[in-house]
Image (cartoon, rainbow, N blue to C red; front, top):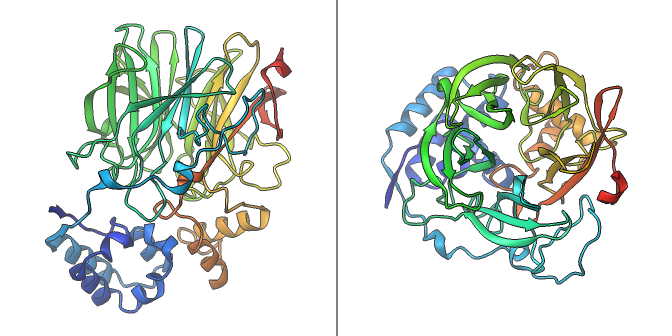
Length: 450
């Protein structure tokens, strides 16, 4: 058994797992457990977030008392052997399909074996005529078991339509619960760049949640093996959120949601293994859902662009685009790139990378995840989520009814979403008066952009 450390940043699911912590919760927040315990979607919320939704109604003394009581407890996990966790039904399903000749945004995308592609929060890398698609493997993540990510998976293709499963780029580890690749570790959004100075492939992976840090790895070949060179890394001691890395010449830049207080631009060391200088901020001082995450960087015609999402967990929201004259200068917002988007939620998706297709003069692809395809957003729901989330920070300007709050509380949350059935939305980016624009297409081909 392993000792578990609890605090206000622990999820309700964790706190309610032990008799001692349930008792402490009931002592300082009487009656609240009865209201939230039956709502599976809320169990992924931290205790701190639930308290914030009370809008100041809970006395500070009770909040501080609960935090101290939780941290003082000695409780031990009786978690079963995760190595025996089965595939989810969607992760195990095999449906042979004919070869594809186009991209179909929002449709189930299967590899050449007939299984759902599992490369979420992912990115493309091109080398020697081969495209590699890598990302989070969610085929064991049903929102009920504690598995977050079952390693980082990689696929290869020569046409961008049909993808062969190559296996694990970084396999799950079961013997060491402190390993970054233990299945309960919240690893997200791997990004790989090649360092010209060292010839090494460098991979940065974010740990979400209370860890809020990076694991940095490197390899001699793109397909590895990768060795860990840095763990629990917080650049300049900032809590780590979503990020991207862009390379300009021999220099790499890290763009990171720092402390949920803005996007921070940093220059990396010549070996790309750590941040050496803070350069500038953008989107500072915003609160959820308006604070920005999921940065996706790209360059076109000497201009640099940053696409970001808002902050509503796996439920999609409105994107923003920003532009700069250089990768190390501040970015200025130029608006939502999604054109005629009735969902008000980025065509029900979240962008993870913008990929410039080699050999195509002006083809940029916005790679995005549709994390919760069974919970489609529309303009009405988008407004409800905006007000319900914002009122915790600014109740003077944003109000929501109890019924609207209930809708949000019952939506798929980070800990309760079955992401094994998440889909992908890949759409080409066009440019209108210098601004990136993303139009919906039911399907598209590379030949459309000759």
